Length: 187
Image (cartoon, rainbow, N blue to C red; front, top):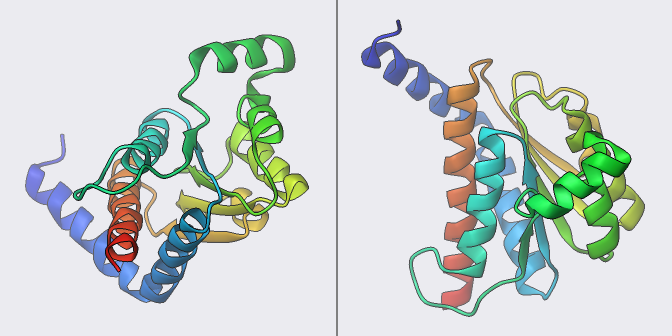
Protein backbone atom coordinates (compact mmCIF):
# COMPACT_ATOMS: atom_id res chain seq x y z
CA UNK A 1 0.00 0.00 0.00
CA UNK A 2 1.24 3.46 -0.88
CA UNK A 3 1.05 6.03 1.88
CA UNK A 4 -0.85 9.26 1.37
CA UNK A 5 2.45 11.14 1.73
CA UNK A 6 3.88 9.15 -1.20
CA UNK A 7 0.74 9.80 -3.26
CA UNK A 8 0.91 13.50 -2.46
CA UNK A 9 4.60 13.71 -3.37
CA UNK A 10 3.92 11.93 -6.66
CA UNK A 11 0.97 14.22 -7.45
CA UNK A 12 3.06 17.31 -6.72
CA UNK A 13 5.86 16.03 -8.95
CA UNK A 14 3.42 15.51 -11.82
CA UNK A 15 1.96 18.99 -11.36
CA UNK A 16 5.42 20.56 -11.27
CA UNK A 17 6.31 18.70 -14.48
CA UNK A 18 3.33 20.43 -16.16
CA UNK A 19 5.15 23.75 -15.86
CA UNK A 20 6.94 22.93 -19.11
CA UNK A 21 3.52 22.80 -20.84
CA UNK A 22 1.89 25.94 -19.41
CA UNK A 23 1.92 27.72 -22.79
CA UNK A 24 0.30 24.70 -24.47
CA UNK A 25 -2.32 24.46 -21.72
CA UNK A 26 -3.16 28.15 -22.08
CA UNK A 27 -3.42 27.80 -25.88
CA UNK A 28 -5.71 24.77 -25.60
CA UNK A 29 -7.98 26.36 -22.99
CA UNK A 30 -8.22 29.53 -25.05
CA UNK A 31 -9.01 27.56 -28.21
CA UNK A 32 -11.74 25.50 -26.54
CA UNK A 33 -13.38 28.57 -25.01
CA UNK A 34 -13.16 30.69 -28.15
CA UNK A 35 -14.56 27.90 -30.34
CA UNK A 36 -17.56 27.22 -28.11
CA UNK A 37 -18.27 30.89 -27.41
CA UNK A 38 -18.24 31.43 -31.18
CA UNK A 39 -21.24 29.09 -31.44
CA UNK A 40 -19.61 25.73 -32.10
CA UNK A 41 -20.41 22.61 -30.05
CA UNK A 42 -18.02 20.91 -27.64
CA UNK A 43 -18.04 17.10 -27.72
CA UNK A 44 -16.28 15.06 -25.05
CA UNK A 45 -15.50 11.38 -24.56
CA UNK A 46 -13.50 8.94 -22.47
CA UNK A 47 -13.58 5.46 -20.94
CA UNK A 48 -13.90 4.50 -17.27
CA UNK A 49 -12.58 7.27 -15.02
CA UNK A 50 -11.86 9.32 -18.13
CA UNK A 51 -15.56 9.02 -19.03
CA UNK A 52 -16.38 10.84 -15.81
CA UNK A 53 -13.92 13.60 -16.76
CA UNK A 54 -15.64 13.90 -20.14
CA UNK A 55 -19.04 14.08 -18.46
CA UNK A 56 -17.73 16.59 -15.90
CA UNK A 57 -16.52 19.00 -18.58
CA UNK A 58 -19.74 18.81 -20.61
CA UNK A 59 -21.99 19.33 -17.58
CA UNK A 60 -19.98 22.37 -16.45
CA UNK A 61 -20.75 24.01 -19.81
CA UNK A 62 -24.41 23.05 -19.86
CA UNK A 63 -24.92 24.07 -16.24
CA UNK A 64 -22.44 26.39 -14.65
CA UNK A 65 -18.97 26.31 -13.20
CA UNK A 66 -19.05 29.13 -10.65
CA UNK A 67 -21.04 32.00 -12.06
CA UNK A 68 -24.38 32.14 -13.78
CA UNK A 69 -24.06 32.50 -17.53
CA UNK A 70 -25.88 31.25 -20.57
CA UNK A 71 -25.67 27.50 -21.11
CA UNK A 72 -23.02 26.52 -23.64
CA UNK A 73 -23.40 23.75 -26.26
CA UNK A 74 -21.72 20.57 -25.02
CA UNK A 75 -22.38 16.88 -25.64
CA UNK A 76 -20.72 14.05 -23.75
CA UNK A 77 -20.55 11.09 -26.14
CA UNK A 78 -20.34 8.59 -23.30
CA UNK A 79 -23.48 9.88 -21.54
CA UNK A 80 -26.13 8.18 -23.68
CA UNK A 81 -26.14 4.54 -22.62
CA UNK A 82 -28.82 3.65 -25.15
CA UNK A 83 -26.84 5.03 -28.08
CA UNK A 84 -23.60 3.49 -26.84
CA UNK A 85 -25.05 0.00 -26.40
CA UNK A 86 -26.90 0.17 -29.71
CA UNK A 87 -23.76 1.20 -31.56
CA UNK A 88 -21.58 -1.31 -29.69
CA UNK A 89 -24.02 -4.11 -30.45
CA UNK A 90 -24.37 -3.31 -34.14
CA UNK A 91 -20.95 -1.85 -35.03
CA UNK A 92 -18.55 -2.77 -32.22
CA UNK A 93 -17.41 -0.97 -29.08
CA UNK A 94 -14.67 0.84 -31.00
CA UNK A 95 -17.36 2.84 -32.87
CA UNK A 96 -19.38 4.13 -29.88
CA UNK A 97 -17.96 7.66 -30.03
CA UNK A 98 -17.11 7.95 -33.74
CA UNK A 99 -20.58 7.09 -34.96
CA UNK A 100 -22.19 9.70 -32.69
CA UNK A 101 -19.63 12.30 -33.75
CA UNK A 102 -20.28 11.60 -37.42
CA UNK A 103 -24.02 12.06 -36.84
CA UNK A 104 -23.88 15.15 -34.64
CA UNK A 105 -20.72 17.16 -35.29
CA UNK A 106 -20.23 19.90 -37.85
CA UNK A 107 -17.01 21.32 -39.28
CA UNK A 108 -15.46 23.70 -36.77
CA UNK A 109 -16.90 21.94 -33.70
CA UNK A 110 -14.44 20.71 -31.10
CA UNK A 111 -13.81 17.30 -29.52
CA UNK A 112 -12.01 16.80 -26.21
CA UNK A 113 -10.91 13.22 -25.60
CA UNK A 114 -9.69 12.02 -22.22
CA UNK A 115 -7.44 8.94 -22.19
CA UNK A 116 -4.76 7.84 -19.77
CA UNK A 117 -3.11 5.60 -22.39
CA UNK A 118 -4.01 7.24 -25.69
CA UNK A 119 -4.49 3.78 -27.19
CA UNK A 120 -8.18 2.99 -26.67
CA UNK A 121 -9.64 1.92 -30.03
CA UNK A 122 -12.83 3.93 -29.51
CA UNK A 123 -10.83 7.10 -28.76
CA UNK A 124 -8.69 6.55 -31.87
CA UNK A 125 -11.83 6.02 -33.96
CA UNK A 126 -13.32 9.24 -32.55
CA UNK A 127 -10.17 11.14 -33.50
CA UNK A 128 -10.33 9.72 -37.04
CA UNK A 129 -14.02 10.73 -37.24
CA UNK A 130 -13.10 14.22 -36.05
CA UNK A 131 -10.57 14.50 -38.88
CA UNK A 132 -13.19 13.33 -41.41
CA UNK A 133 -15.77 15.84 -40.11
CA UNK A 134 -13.22 18.71 -39.89
CA UNK A 135 -13.72 18.86 -36.13
CA UNK A 136 -10.90 20.30 -34.03
CA UNK A 137 -9.64 17.64 -31.65
CA UNK A 138 -7.95 17.98 -28.29
CA UNK A 139 -6.51 14.85 -26.66
CA UNK A 140 -5.75 14.99 -22.95
CA UNK A 141 -3.49 12.00 -22.48
CA UNK A 142 -1.01 10.36 -20.14
CA UNK A 143 2.09 8.18 -20.26
CA UNK A 144 3.63 8.70 -23.75
CA UNK A 145 0.36 9.79 -25.36
CA UNK A 146 -0.07 6.57 -27.29
CA UNK A 147 -1.42 6.51 -30.84
CA UNK A 148 -3.86 9.35 -30.06
CA UNK A 149 -0.97 11.77 -29.83
CA UNK A 150 -0.45 11.72 -33.59
CA UNK A 151 -4.17 11.85 -34.46
CA UNK A 152 -5.38 14.85 -32.46
CA UNK A 153 -5.17 18.42 -33.65
CA UNK A 154 -3.75 19.37 -30.24
CA UNK A 155 -2.46 17.16 -27.45
CA UNK A 156 -1.48 17.54 -23.87
CA UNK A 157 0.33 14.60 -22.29
CA UNK A 158 0.43 14.36 -18.52
CA UNK A 159 3.95 13.14 -17.67
CA UNK A 160 3.01 10.10 -15.60
CA UNK A 161 2.38 6.38 -15.98
CA UNK A 162 0.04 6.32 -12.96
CA UNK A 163 -3.61 6.48 -14.10
CA UNK A 164 -4.69 8.08 -10.81
CA UNK A 165 -2.22 10.96 -11.21
CA UNK A 166 -3.14 11.36 -14.88
CA UNK A 167 -6.86 11.55 -14.12
CA UNK A 168 -6.31 13.97 -11.24
CA UNK A 169 -4.37 16.21 -13.60
CA UNK A 170 -7.03 15.88 -16.30
CA UNK A 171 -9.53 17.20 -13.76
CA UNK A 172 -7.28 20.20 -13.14
CA UNK A 173 -7.05 20.77 -16.91
CA UNK A 174 -10.81 20.59 -17.44
CA UNK A 175 -11.23 23.08 -14.61
CA UNK A 176 -8.69 25.32 -16.36
CA UNK A 177 -10.98 25.23 -19.40
CA UNK A 178 -13.92 26.17 -17.18
CA UNK A 179 -11.91 29.07 -15.74
CA UNK A 180 -11.31 30.31 -19.29
CA UNK A 181 -15.05 30.18 -20.02
CA UNK A 182 -15.74 32.09 -16.80
CA UNK A 183 -13.17 34.76 -17.72
CA UNK A 184 -14.42 35.18 -21.29
CA UNK A 185 -18.12 35.32 -20.42
CA UNK A 186 -17.53 38.08 -17.84
CA UNK A 187 -15.92 40.38 -20.40
